[in-house]
Image (cartoon, rainbow, N blue to C red; front, side, top):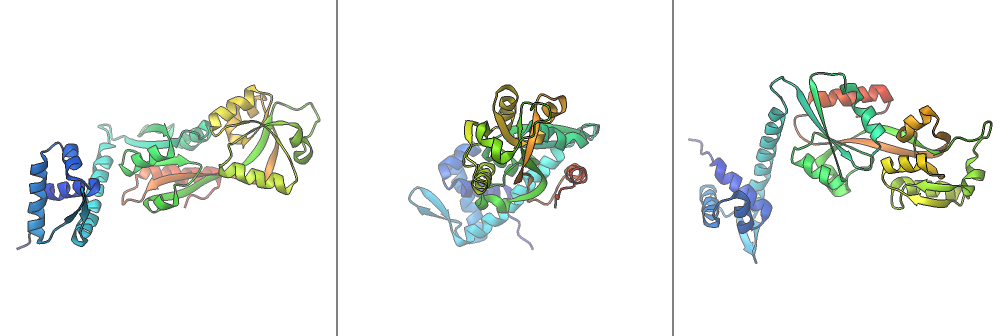
Length: 301
């Protein structure tokens, strides 16, 4: 006759393994430490081998413990996923799509991305802004379905995520309208201007500096801003000229407040849709990514 593990015992084991400490796990689970210890011992007795060994104050997984933890991780992550999927269906059978947005990302880009869903009555969109780390933690815990970002996660974490390129934007030099008939020459005119630039350490800035070095251009910095909404405001309200994708100031370009002086050769910003590697992907998310591919002509696979 097949033997079945006690689900609660297995869940408690999973929590203790993640904490590495019995006291902290008991506090998180709101049960007595002695009761938690007893549950773990019962599971070890049923399996027939220890799952933990003590190293100082820490509990370290044995070889059997590592195997059990790998299975537990799959079980309870899938359980959380199922709960998330079912919870995202409302009584009206609306699909709730929760999208995390890197705080520094252009709001125009975000609006353009979700536009295909704005006329649909079967979808509710929830936008959550934050840092990359905050949003990635929410994605891992199934509190988000998708993250919009202009950079990829750290290499050490990339194995957790699907990272789909959804667009690329060539960067431009933008400023107040030039006198009629005047043409901006990047090499000659850039050194005479005060520049609003993304901060040092960003991929865009590093590539821009390489291009300027190749063209023997020395420029003057008015301000360094890593937040695209703030860069948009300064481009509009200051006397400096800005380096940014034109989508950031699409409204100002349309109404004539700003002018695109030129596109910077070989300088692009890349945008990604980041989701968790999991078995279920909401149909509405697949639709959104496919629709954006059709609208932009960019790859999403």
